[in-house]
Length: 176
Image (cartoon, rainbow, N blue to C red; front, side):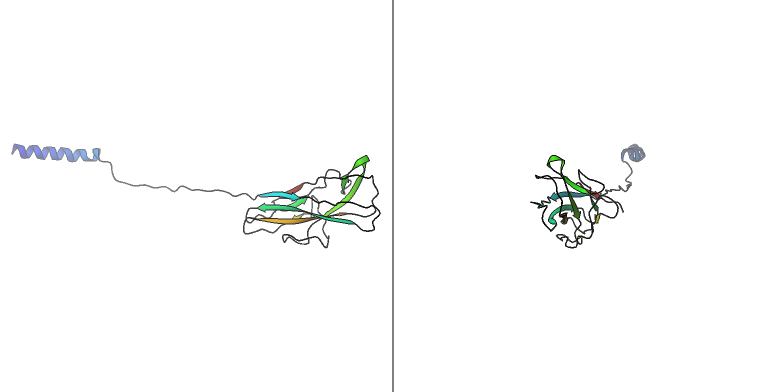
């Protein structure tokens, strides 16, 4: 009986220690929120607008076409502005040339925002503010879109002989 009582006491003792030896088997959980924000963004490049040779005695304006090429994230629809260049005179674009000469020119938006469209109508002059911006159409995927920049040098401008240049900055605006 002593052995039985000893085993009983040992078993009771071990049962009392069991909660201290083995941790309780409970599980808890929490949610981890994961977020990211994709910003409206576009990469831009240009194709130069090269008028070539201008004849001030011609009875016709000189026309040429360049382009703005953009690659935007899906659903981005920026407005595109073109500034007045480095040599503006009272809101008119001018190329600078030799002997302090200037040659006026105008830039027009394409007839619509379908990629590759020209500017047959030359209805909307492209400037850097107000309604003179191109409002693009959002795409459902990332793709490359090319917008024509149509230039005109008006006829009958008499200036010095030589090469004339200007640099125009294209700017995107994603605000409403």
